[in-house]
Amino acid sequence: MVKRVAVIGAGCSGLTAIKSCLEEGHEPICFEKSHDIGGLWRYTETVEDKRASLYSSVVTNTSKEMMCYSDFPMPDDFPAYLHNSKVLEYLRLYADHFRLLKYIQFETEVCQVTKSPNFTMNGQWEVLTKKNGTEKKECFDAVMVCNGHHVDHYLPLESFPGIEKFKGHYIHSRFYKKSEDYHGKTVLVVGIGNSAGDISVEISSKAKQVYLSTRQGTWVVSRISHHGYPVDMALATRFFFWFSNLLPAYLFNKMNEKHMSSWFDHGNYGLEPENRSFSREPIVNDYLPSQILCGAIRVKPNISTFTETSVIFEDGTVVEDLDEVIFATGYSISFPFLDDSVIRVDNNKVALYKNVFPLSHEKPTIAFLGLVQPLGSLLPVSEIQARWATQVFKGTAHLPSVSKMKNYYQKSVEQKLKRFGRSRFQTLQTFFIGYMDEIAVEIGVRPNIIVLFLKDPRFAWNVFFGPCTPYQYRLTGPGKWSGARKAVLTQWSRTLNPAKTRVVQRFQSKTKQIVVLFGLAAAILVCVYYIAFKNHQQESL
Figure 1 (tube, helix red, strand yellow):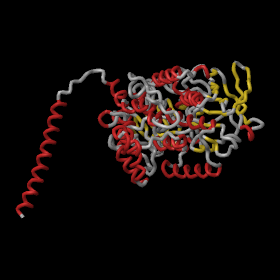
Figure 2 (cartoon, helix red, strand yellow):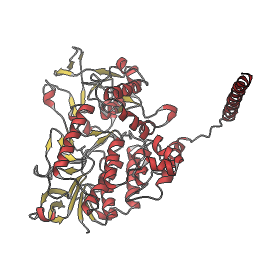
Figure 3 (cartoon, one colour):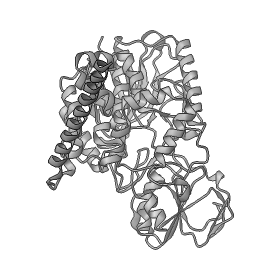
Figure 4 (spheres, helix red, strand yellow):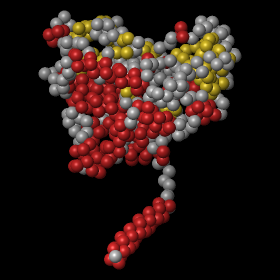
């Protein structure tokens, strides 16, 4: 049965929601408050109300092969890591290729979403929208919420005594755009996430001095791994995920800590996390250690209090003549168009079955996309969530009973507490491969590694030991893509070729091959000699 589906938001989650609806034969109508697609990835010079914002220099933390949609590889000439403008370009290419724009109503704000009077019978929703001051109410068979979780900034000023006395200027990182405004100033950045690291580094080239205040510390990783490969492609493999799951949590954390410290000793830079018993999300930053080493950034502990012109830290140290403070203290999940009876946010936690479906609705006709913080990219995660949700709407995929969903949710919360800790910023965190596989099982698209090894060992080797790119979830089952196998086999060339802008003649390559061949020949001769010697000994006896 065809369902009329309301999609709220035309960012990376909303676009793939539209496409998934079309694949399952639904009729999507997407409501976008602004005049264009892109969501978080569309940079604007000023901060727009009720819309995610980013600063002009943002570059992705995940490589292009790991963050693309599963049936639409990024262009060959795109670099491994993308400036935000390139991500927006990719989203435009995706929307054009699959002809999604005609399903989007721009400059249309969703004001309210409520259950229809006969919800228990038909599961329908009433959606109230506003465009050019005119309100309109429509009925939909299902709703997909794709408004993201980087809109309402979290700024707990009560946690910073004396801030009301401070005569300098302070903002939340949501309102930061460019570093030029901080030329010659003394700046304090509060927080230790990716935004805090990026902003500290960028400002340090212009400011008189930058201080970075962190309560707990963090691990820092470079985008570049061994041999120059993107770090996520090197680490996000099925083999590594399988192996890490065999280890006790403490041993995994120890191994993870050793890897994180292989670049530099975090303790010497004041960055080492205080509690290392949890798997904290590292920040990705290639320049932060260098700027600390050069003295441009000084890492400080938690803040004790502000004065009119200074800040005092918990270790008793003081920074005088402080000009600017940037609070990179994260965001709060919110759904201003939904009543608490539909979904309730409690201390940044939302009770959802596998981060998508509410636990207690009689009809599974509302889904939330992108409410997850994987140790990887969000684009393919939102996509597989959309594929699952639209199949549930259609009736080809089914949810368990309410009691089973609640039990599952409770167990997952307990596991996250053990793995990631109790911080409000850890509520959405999960492992990329584990979560992708979890949803893939729901719709029958998780690759069967054993069968692959039996049928196609060479390809199976790439799938198991190579990076777990999104194409793997188009190899089989509903939505199978004929180009998935080729995309997996050519992923490294698309990653590395854009950087090969100067041809390098590697004359030593043949020499290496000759050495290897001689080594193999020598090894064979030794084995033959050893066998012959043993046979001679036996004959002598």
